[in-house]
Image: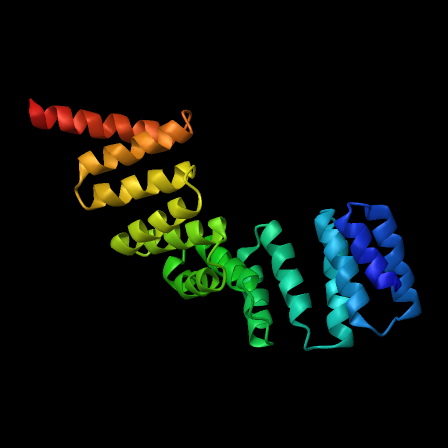
Length: 222
């Protein structure tokens, strides 16, 4: 087993000191191989040593310019530090260089959402959703992106998909209720707020929404 694989195994087992030593040994033996620097950088990101991690990613890219994994790593690093514009640039470059799994599309979408650009995020979230049908978080965030983009009917359907994957997803019930309120269906929305509170009795937004709807319905009956 190579030192590189040892480091990866150590990292997966949360043996971070051993992982660092293995990656360091691999880099010393293979100073021109960017993969060692990328893996060491990934470990540093996990340890939130962002400045050092960036140096290792940059070193990898100095050895080889076409490294989508390094750009993805830099994007994740910037995202963790809430540098969303820089993260967007790196995720876009990773895709341009051939990375095409759901994670890169999802993270690019999240970076754009974090810059209040839901319509730009939408195609990337949609692609992530298509590539990972069973990932609850991806499906939920896609639903939110639809809602933020003003596509209320589509967002409601997406929340149904989330609920089909996780019947205890209180935020999906809450957001479905909000969609129903946009469609002026307060009675149906009330049921969804109730579902959210059954799952999560301390759901503040659902509790507030339920009170508002009940007040509205009471005024209509008066």
